[in-house]
Amino acid sequence: MSFFKKAEKTNAFLKMGMMGFQGSGKTYTGTQVAIGLVKLMRQSGLNGTKPIAFIDTEKGSDWVIPHVEREGLELVTAKTRAFSDLVQATADAEKNASVLIVDSVTHFWTELCESYAAQRAREMRRENYRLQMTDWTLLKKKWREFTDIYVNSSLHMIICGRAGYEYDFFEDEAGKKQLEKTGIKFKAEGEMGYEPDLLVLMERRMNMDTKADEHIAHVVKDRSTLLDGQEFIDPTFKSFLPHIRMLNL
Image (cartoon, rainbow, N blue to C red; front, side, top):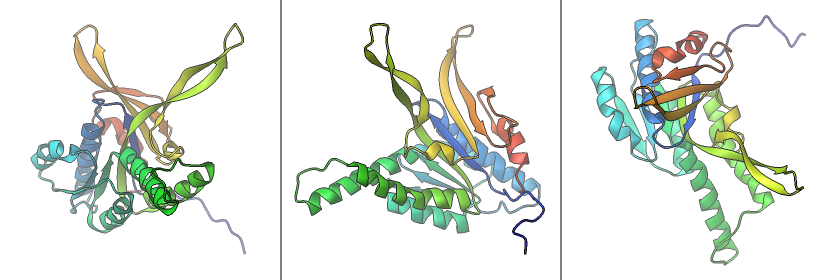
């Protein structure tokens, strides 16, 4: 008996990640992608009748309601920062939503770490507790409860999170070690950036010719390779459509 069969396209759901610093346009752009995706499904005769779900940690959903309703769509929200709520709400959205936006996933990782540290402090009858190496193994295992459902769920998901800098030590000409920035990463559990099929870094910068701010989308990773490394100024749903067209919708 062979374990292998003819290869076929099984990726049917958008798994998108958006990271950036404050004011970079993560929430707005993620919402525009969700709106465009639902409209595409409806136009294609696919299931797009369910609402857009938004797990909201910082009231971002309040500001996108007009954009969703303007398109004749429905937005439902769950406002929480509890990691346990994140897992349950994602499972609920898989049954009852067309697309799920999570913003910001950074808060859920922070809450998971802080609540675990508080629990350990109570168990050890201390005022506070500093996480140890062995604790990170347990926390990463717990976090996988979310990433597993994110990757494997039958649900289009767009996760937004804060960006953070990566640092490393370099030896200068005098032989002294200096700490320098080496890159930008998803500010959450260390391997979060590996999970999305489409990972975008949002940035806000000024156009020096017009003196107007622009929101720039840098495609950090695209498993379809169609958008990998590209940049879009004030991106829209159409900017990411080549990747979405590759899905077996």
